[in-house]
Image 1 (cartoon, rainbow, N blue to C red):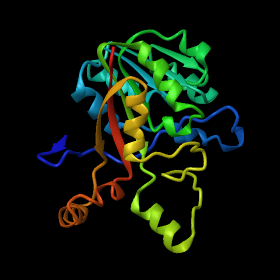
Image 2: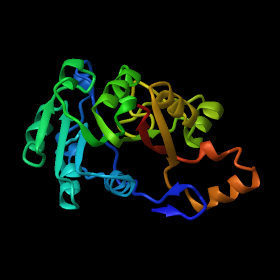
Image 3: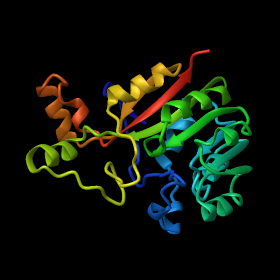
Length: 237
C-alpha cells in the first residue's frame, strides 16, 4: 500500500530475513530465527505483478512462500543455506535447493519464474552484482526481482559514527555482523542498472515527523530516514 503522492510504501517492519555464507559458520542464526513470514515482501509481490511462479532466495522455513501459495501462487521454490531451515522449508514449498545462492552450479539448476525474491539477502553476499546478473536469466518475460536492502545512510548509523565514533556490529539490523556489503539508495540503483535492470525503488515507511524534515529541507535529507529500501527490478532484455 502506498501513501498517495508520497512514493512511500506502507509495509510491515516486523522482521528481517538473512542469508548466511558457508564461510561464516560461527555467525549462523539460531533455528527459531528462520520462522518469519515476510508480509512486507508478500504485499509488494502480490501488488506488482504475477506470482504464478516464485523463487524465494533465502527462504528460511518457507513460510513466506507458503503464504504466497495461499493467496494464489501456483509454484513457489526456494534456496536455503541453513540445513535445518532447508529441511523445514521442504514441507512448505514445491521445491527447495540446499546451498548458497552464490553457487553458480546451484543456480544452473533452477527454473524460470515470474517473481524472484531477495528479501534482505544481497547485503550478505560476497558478490551480489554477479548474483543478480545470473538471476536475471531466470526471470520470465514481464517478470521481476523484488529485493529489500538496508540503508547504510540511516541517520542513527551516521550520527553514531560522526558524533561518537561508534560503528558497532549487532546481531540484527543495518549493522548485522553477517553483512558483507553496505548500500545507499544511489548504490542500490547503480547495482541493478549496471547489471541490466530497470529499477523502481521505494523507502520503507518512515515516521511522520520525517516528512516534515523532508519538506523543510526540500528533500535533501530524504535518504537519511528510511532504514531500508524496497526494490522492484525488471530485466532489460
